[in-house]
Image 1 (tube, helix red, strand yellow):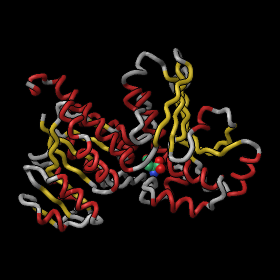
Image 2 (image 1 turned 30 degrees about the horizontal axis):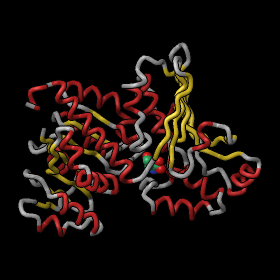
Image 3 (image 1 turned 90 degrees about the vertical axis):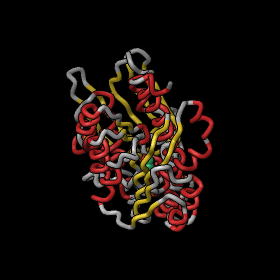
Image 4 (image 1 turned 120 degrees about the horizontal axis):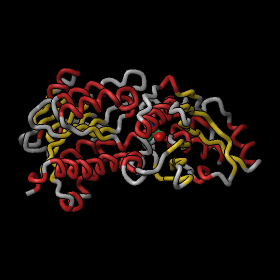
Length: 359
Ligand code: HSE
């Protein structure tokens, strides 16, 4: 099955996707998937289109040159328009040469824009949407899911929580049949990395700069350290688990900004470690309470093993008791992997809905 992709945003995540598509050609072919990238939109590039597909080598070179459009302009068949305003991007998304929109622009935790408009327009036009952007999903998951259903399109967002580590699809697949009554997790790679560095003697600012250099931090790293990134992830998890209609303001939020190096080192001397924990509990009456806060954890705590950029989540279930999933929580290829895994799942869903497309 051939799928034409539009990459909206060409930062670390979609650049990582291009690398993965090159590396995983055979895996994708084995899954029955042939991918063409027919559109790339980015504030630094403009909008590049090619109905027959932009060469992956050219996109790789574009990334290596610091997102410069020169290689794209030399690519035969590719047109580059410098005009990258919202209307122009929405028009390009609506093009007949796009089947799937991969939305990986920056997260705006307050409005979700412009990503929300990208996702809404794509779904209204019957395009499938795969996004790693927490804004539109935390703020408008129910609205977007309704549009997707009406348009017979898929909305997929595995990469919004714990990057490529499988979490959200586990809820919808292998955990089905269990009642999940709560969860607690280390859901921000940057703050976990920073706490570890400070524990090892670094200062907060230097550790944050290093997290930025490693591609873990948000465009504005304040979201990582003030807890709002985790707040969005708690909303996404609670709504995916329980259709709880939870909103950001329902999640009491405190980040690691209030901690000092001294707090971290004193805790370490006591055999404890500070971790930023996002959690939610569903009561028997269906109400949900949720919070984000730094907690001092003893060495024996199951979340304590998650160090550096590693994330971990413990689900409290009725049948299995506590189930913990752990893995990378940030990083360009790690997050790009979530998109790849959504793409493979999308092929299966399209094939299941219309088996003849594979014949
Ligand atoms: N800035 C985020 C983090 C990226 O550090 O976890 C993944 O959502």
